[in-house]
Amino acid sequence: MGQKVHPYGFRLGVNQDWRTRWYSEKSYTKFLLDDLKLRRVVEQKCVGGAVARVEIERPGDEVHVTLYSARPGILIGRGGQNVEMLKSELEKVSGDKIRLTVREVEHAELESALVARSIADRLQERIPFRRAMRQASFRTLQSGAKGIKIKCSGRLGGLEIARTETLRQGQMPLHKLRANIDYGFAEAHTVMGRIGVKVWIYKGDIIPEVKEEHATAETGEVPQGT
Image (cartoon, rainbow, N blue to C red):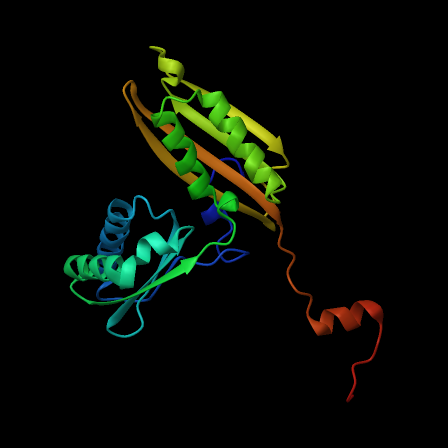
C-alpha cells in the first residue's frame, strides 16, 4: 500500500502537517485556485532561489506565504528588492494582502525537491544520468539520510525508446507510517524531450510521545497527587 500512494499524503495527520492551512465553506473553490496560482508564480519567479517547499496560511483577510529556501540571499536580494517584487506579483495574482516570509533550509541535501531539481539541472547539462543519480545519492547519504531512492523516466541517454532507471541505496520503508520520508519531483527539459525525476529520502522514524497515563499503567507506578 505504501508504494502505491503519495508518501506525503499517506502520512498526513500522522507525522506530516498540511502545507496549506485554512478553512472556508463559501470561498473554498476560490481559495484553492488562488493557492495553485501562488505556487505557480513562486515556481516561475524563484528558479534560482532553490525553494524546497511553500506553505500558505489564511488568518483573517491576509495570506501568509512562507518560502523554505537553501539560498535565501538570492530570494531576498539587495535591500529586500527581490522579495518586494515577488510580493507584488503574488498580490496581483491573488488580489489579497500578502505577507511573505523567507526561511533558510539547513541541509539542502536532505530536501527531496532540491535533490530532484539538481539532478534535472545536470541532465539538462547533458551529464550522464547514472553519474548524476550516483553523485546525488552519495551527497544525501553523507548528509545523514538513512536511505534514498531515485527514479528517472524518459528518453535516457538519447535513445528512441523511453525507459525507467531506478537507484536505491540504504533503507526505504514506504509502508511504515512512522517513517519520515520526503518526496520530490522535477522535470528536465532536454533536446530529446522531458525526463521526469522522482526522489524519495528516508530521514528516520518519528516516534510519537507516550502519554503519562499510559506510561504509569505500563510501569505500575501510582501518579503523584492521588
